[in-house]
Length: 302
Ligand code: HEM
Image (cartoon, rainbow, N blue to C red; front, side, top):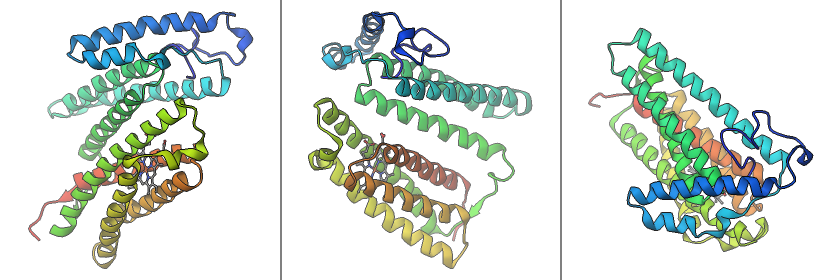
């Protein structure tokens, strides 16, 4: 874990770079703070009827492991928070702008809803930290981020002169876009299940070189579903080249090719860390392109 507390990092707005800047018993101090937060979160889970999950978290010894200070991790995590802070401010500006320019449309409500979801996401980020990266919390955190992006893209589609331009597709292509979007979303969910298995293997002490052999069913389904996405998108790309030549379809195909390459590298080259990151980024990009394309579809009876 990069920063044991939230929103500050080791109690500071500018995190330390050397362990000597921390009190000698920093691990004990931050463990106690996290314990309190975990207790509060578990109470909340119990209150909303998730007693079993609360008990699981409370009794998981991994939650109470306090890692030694690691400057690279600390700063990576802190940069993530700073970017999140910028995104929050951008959404706030967007909301104010909607209030000013689009007061009479439903966009004000949508922009406000996105602000609220971002607030929940920030709070949940603190839970991911407090519970020491419990795998399902990472997954939920990621999906909430996708929801925020999807809503923001909808706002963009409504207000941008370029993005609100409709794209015409025939009936088969229209259906295929929705289907590929749905499968890609499900594929992302399967991918997070694979990552959760890897998190478990890491905790059990297995190294990168052994992960692929030990991954279960989720990995094989994830890998096989990629063929389905590839087949459908290849058909769409082929059809697109013969007709409308939409940039969005071309881009989706290129991003999918990169995504598949990164997936194969993950599976057969011992999962290099940077490729793990790229795999997630390109999956999100693919989802974003397909989502925006589905919004821009022109509904005609052809
Ligand atoms: C449409 C194509 C694909 C999509 C949209 C996709 C999406 C994803 C996502 C969202 C994750 C979770 C990342 C995270 O939570 O950090 C993931 C993980 C993973 N994917 Fe894929 N994937 C695709 C294709 C493939 C292929 C073809 C392979 C291998 C043959 C593959 C292997 C993996 C592996 C090994 C992981 C776990 C890596 C980790 O821990 O980050 N994926 N995928």
